[in-house]
Amino acid sequence: MKRRHLLGATVATFAMLSMPVLADTTWPERPVRILVSFPPGGSSDLVARMLGEKLSASLGQQFVVENKPGAAGTVAASALKDAEPDGYTFMLSNLTPFNVAPIRFPDTPYDPIADFDHITYIGTVHLGLFAGPSMGVSDLGALIEAASADPGKYEYGSSGVGSWGHIIAEQFQNETEIELFHIPYKGSGPMRLDFRGGVVPSIFDAVPQNLPAVEDGTAIPLAVTATSRLSSLPDVPTFTELGYDIVAENWLGFSAPAGVPDEIKVKLDAALTEAMALPDVQAQFDTWGLVREPKTSAEFETFVSDLLVQWTPLVKSAME
Image (cartoon, rainbow, N blue to C red):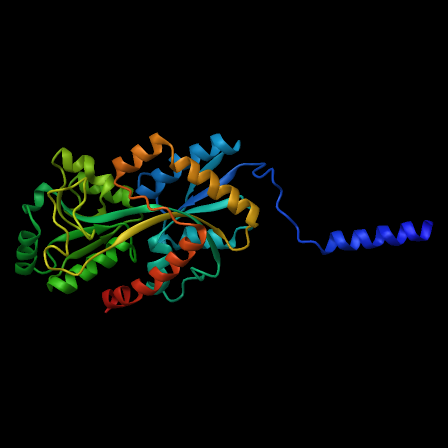
């Protein structure tokens, strides 16, 4: 009898050891980091902080934003890749480090698909070309005419070398055959401060954070990279409308190092989906011009992979 009990216990123990280890459903049990690839003040930072507050309230632990700017977002993405896949480090992911930088910089120390779990798609913002009053232009044609007459004289800022603003600016110069002088910043926040202070006369930047400057007349929107005019800037033409094949959208999402347990990913995705359905969050998204299009986690993974293919010729062309 004792032998049968011992054998049964041994078999049960072996069976338990053979079962897959399931995530602790009490997650999170300590603060969670949200990495952001730009300094405070940019669209990624603002979205991360707002959603972090909602996650803290709904999941009972602090979701703390940690800004890691630099190298076209690869600093933050590299830190995410190297983090333990235990559900305590995520990233407010975006286009540049996952769809632009790996093409622009062949030595990028991660695979944008294999090394990550892309969990929740948040939405997208559009890029605009904005001029300051000191530049003396009121439309895109005037800028092109002025830059054609004085190659290299006119400066523009982007949020960094290899950023989507930089790549689109290069494409714009290729298509218009003009030459602008590039001033790269470590993020859109400091770039925008210099722009409004008159240090840099024009910028390629996300539309939402420049709307207050447009309203007070310190920023003149010349064109946007959407496929149709934006409701937030109905009088501003698209690049395609003006005859240029320039379309770009900066997506935002929540990503993790590869290997996070499915239970945690499902719980996070559900909490984020619930947060984004809140009226105050939807209203803020509308104010920022962030377009929300629901996607499942599987659809989000495919979306990131497909964009990597779509951006490859664009980035390579801009590098020539």
